Image (tube, rainbow, N blue to C red; front, side):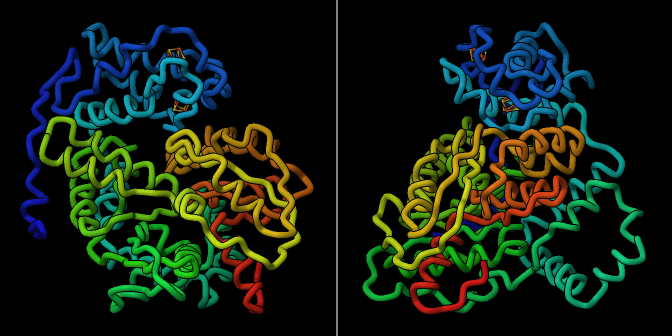
Length: 452
Ligand code: SF4
Ligand code: SF4
């Protein structure tokens, strides 16, 4: 039975009320910091510690600060904002930590407390509310924004804005972002609105539901299309539930756990009849798998969230594990692979995408040193912390091999950030999603012209 919207909106009380100087409901889970022995083995893995050399911007320093508030030794003040919000939530520290301390999870929980104790004000509050609450959870508004962007790109306005230097009124990092925005296409959610199911080519082996994503379906609808083609080619009937919504990752990362819970409930309901939920954006996949964390104090929804999260699978792992058809056409390219943090550190998926790429005839894989180092995208971190994001991107680009034609990855945020790196540092690689390459190989095999 479908849940009425009013029921979804009525927040169940989070029964854990406070902890030390965390005075709001849903405080951080102290068992997460309990295992930290301050050994420092996480320090080198942390991009912000690498850039600043400061303990407060290291995983160990952050855990110490967060624990101190929980023990009542520190208050939540403005001084806490920088160390906690400068974190990329990249999870590299958890991979490096011998005790598996979930620093990223703690950071998200503590941000929830900080945003209640010290709410955003002024234009930051306006931008936050407008995009995170007013646009991303509403597909029709997002599609309208996409149409306006498409008009800007196609009508000549873009050329005029660039030629007349009109864009200079915007902050530099937004101008850079404008330069690498992909061409907006038709969202697959809209395109397949009237189809209950997109049928498999040939015999149906599985039925899967696709998370189209919010920004993903507007900015990268071509990747969603490629995902559908690859899934149907491999014997999957594909369903696109129309009542699905934004995964809530950006909200949870920003400390708005209440909106995160509302969106999680809507998605759990939307996908309740699906056996498998396929995701092609690492950040969204990681969030969906972590929905149970949002309902620690709500047994009913926690159980539903646990059942739901077990159905979630990244596209690369799903194809790998279900035995995808190896392409026969050659692509003849040198490719390097960047591990998106929320795929490698967040979901432990490293080998599957590489195996898919290596299985394409003619592809030569060139390893990238420190491939699982964050690129600085981290959701909207490159907008909220442009200077740090740029410094991290510069380090990342130094590791991209010179002699490759493509940089492949499995997360749209990383794709935008790496495309910015290519433009900014005078490189000439094209940035692609792993599933796009498999799709191109299939298309070439079918005699279609491939535009790489
Ligand atoms: S988070 Fe882990 S690696 Fe870092 S100091 Fe604590 S125990 Fe050591
Ligand atoms: S999540 Fe990333 S940025 Fe944050 S403390 Fe860990 S390694 Fe550093």
